[in-house]
Image 1: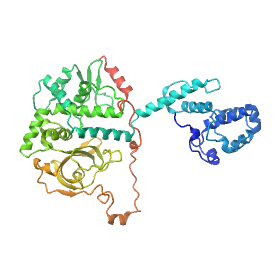
Image 2: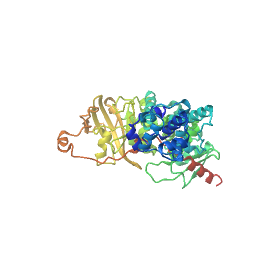
Image 3: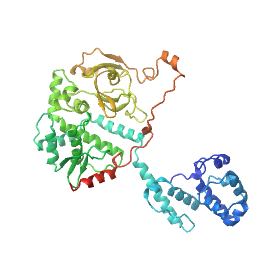
Image 4: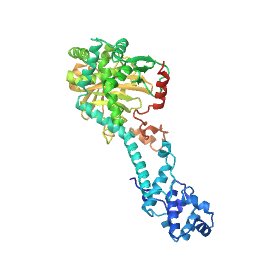
Length: 497
């Protein structure tokens, strides 16, 4: 059971009585006043006469609905034969009083209010068994909701866990590759880019019809109606929107047998698997490995060539390269998606690169060294071709190739890197661009240059952007951020069309 407010730190009597209700536990105080009054055999009328106030006002105090002033607290303490410190004591007068306080506090909280249940009148008529049960139910509900709530730290831990799994497998999932190939074989797709027509054939083969609508719930990319076997999509002009990929991810949830995720970690793992599955359909293992092997033999490996060959985004091509590079080409690698602010959005590595990480091992949300390719590329004027650079780091020299892409949430760099011994297979290895990174040594780029620090230290006060989302829990629900009511209303509106 959670610690009672009787055991929480409290302010001095003078400050507690004069401060707002957040400082004085009026529920606990009221129960103590009632307990002491009854112990002295006083009625509300009798105590009211002793302290010079109406019995109705004392009743409000005892029920925790009114905060008494300091002068009233002193009068009550004197009339009840106790001290002010004792009146504001840290321990409940009895087990029953502690339960009554817990129940009263719970019923006034936002969780109980959200349940839409009638409030139970807390009085001496309630048996101890009922009190124990009601308080126990409330505490268990809070515990379960706390377990389900994905805080930013829990989300980072989940990311770290799934990235560790990916590293162990060299980001190659043979079972997902097999399932994707079986589906491609079933619709007769042999090689080359997967067209919109073939993507629709895959959905039809699985018994789903497609509907393009203009009123898709704003919190979703697609909605699958399992009752009527329909997949709802929307057309978009955004550069980072590929209707094929969205459809194939929706199909992936069905093929992979996903159930409603129990927590954020499971939600994240399902998302990683469906993204992988969709990529394995868009860029089939057999033909993609053949394409990459030929490029490696010619020492002309290039992510943009893979992108162009399969008509996918640069980010999709980069991810797919990490799936196949180690397993089939013997090349260890790393991937980064970095926001223009320098913060890592996504990352993967199995080549020993020293990504920045927090105490949980999480990489996402960390600032990357400003001398790495993924940062330097933002300042390159030529946005048409990939930018290539060697970077000397504390753990070795890495060659990276990167591009920038505009997304709805800003501009991102997308980079693939390999240790120096693998650069011989890549186009762009002849670049003369080179930098040195001493990170995690703070003197590398975390501290401002000495001349600027001397001139401006103590004379600058920047107004930081308030990233309040970093302090909040992840959006609630099995599918974080999705409004289930909106989804159900959407399905109901389209059910008979």
